[in-house]
Length: 257
Image 1 (cartoon, rainbow, N blue to C red):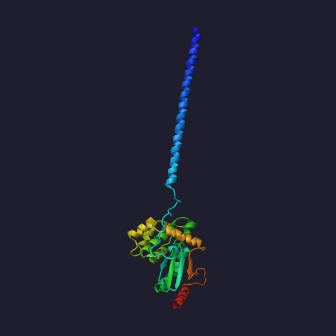
Image 2 (tube, rainbow, N blue to C red):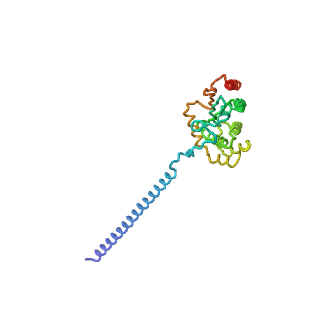
Image 3 (tube, rainbow, N blue to C red):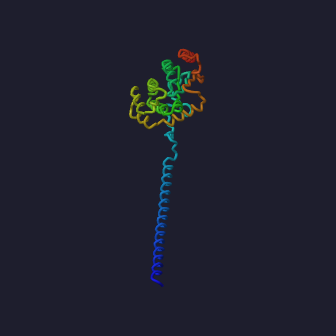
């Protein structure tokens, strides 16, 4: 065999060996890439599972939790906050929303008459809280204010705080009552209300689930809006002839029997 032939075969073998090494290296990189991708996928899946587990049972808000009715609440499911004597012959049921402008208007018109009649023992009022404006406008001011009012009920300051909330009601489109600090600030206008217990109740949303249940009862009741005002079961807010004087007359006539 000539020297040139031997050199040619040797060169071919060397090229083949080099190609084999390149193929082995490429195969090794491919296996490494497959393993690495699989590990990343497993870790990603684990992370997703972790997030799902961490959020299990959550629905996007803090409505879940025990329903804690405020002190003294009564009626079906303890959803009514009573004001006045149980012996009164007339009962006024008021469905209201602290963000509702029409509710404020009703308050401004009828408040003094209602206070007079409850103080005289002739009228009992059942306040029931709704969150219709939160649903219509967005936000959580209706709910937070209702929770704060329930917290005030816990320490016997519901009526005074109720009136303060309406006296300081923001415009309907302004969700100012969503700020618990604002609700606590307004509590300073009521003697003896701005206490550590009240502040904790407001900040913790102690009665949020109770408010949600009350709002659900309002929706199921078939009412058209707030305020809905019922005197002994009759809707007087829809009575175009109703006035504070007429309400007072009807209540006093019932008291006399």
